[in-house]
Every structure is written in structure tokens, then in C-alpha cells.
Image (cartoon, rainbow, N blue to C red; front, side):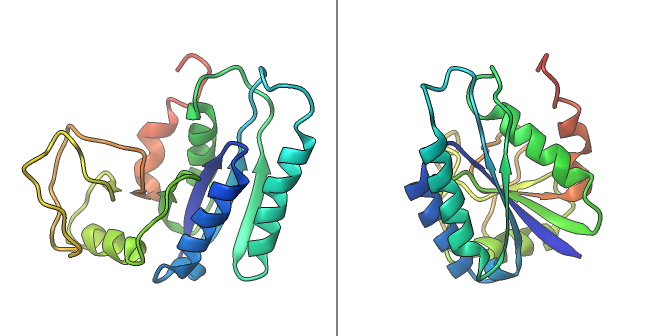
Length: 180
């Protein structure tokens, strides 16, 4: 079984470089398969081939030390990164032999124990997903570096540093359609 790290990106090669650097420095990060998906918007100004080239160069730089795949999305009219994220989830869901699917946006710099923490939390229970982020709606919860310290919630979600069991993406990908 393998793990996938999905990185939705939008023309921020500097952030992407740091994001990939942190992933590869994290415990277990170099063992993951990483997919970088470059989002494209219809309203993009002019010729962005240089910017796409810069993103591709960042991915190429890291592909020598780990398994990195570059995906360039077709132009789309959708706001934010929802289309890109849902398409990534859909592709990850239909990929056989995957244990965990992580979502790390290109401007997120993970902690060295990010993967260790998620795996430890997922070993403790059959959770829909785990989120490695402090939810501001739970101000009484103190931050901790220990995998045993987490809260269970059916109300809170953030797309920052998420880990899914691949099978748990089934109800999510139902929303991967233009109407959503």
C-alpha cells in the first residue's frame, strides 16, 4: 500500500518549492507519492507559459529525490481551488493500492511530524478524516505536539493538512461536478 500527497497549486512556485521541501524533510515524507496539480482559470491574464514553466521546474527539481507527478488542469471558470481539489480527490479515489490520501495546499508548510501524527491518529480510530490544523472554533483546546492529543468533532473541517483513508473519499467525490 502506498500513500498519496495531493498539492493543489496556483502559480506560486516559491510557495510550492517550500511546501515540497517541508514534505520531503518530514518523517516519512520521502516515501510518499506526490501529485502537484496546477489549477488554471479562464480569466488568467495573457500568456502564463513562463509561470507554468516555473511551477514545472520546481516539480522537476524535486522529482529526482522522490516520486512527484505534475498535473496541469484545463482552464475552468470555477472560483477558488474547489475544482482542482475535487478532481485530485476523484483521481486519488480511483487509484488502486492507496492507503492514505493527504491534501496539502501549496502555501502550507507542514511540521516534521505531520505524517507520523496523522498515521497515529488514524490508528486510534476509524475517522472520516484527520485534519492537522488548530480549529479556531475550539479556542479552549491547547496546541500539542503529541499524536495522542487531538479532538473529535463532527462539525469542524479545514482543508489545511488533511488525511483521508482512500475509501472515505467516496462520499466526497460525489460533489466533483460542475453544479457543486
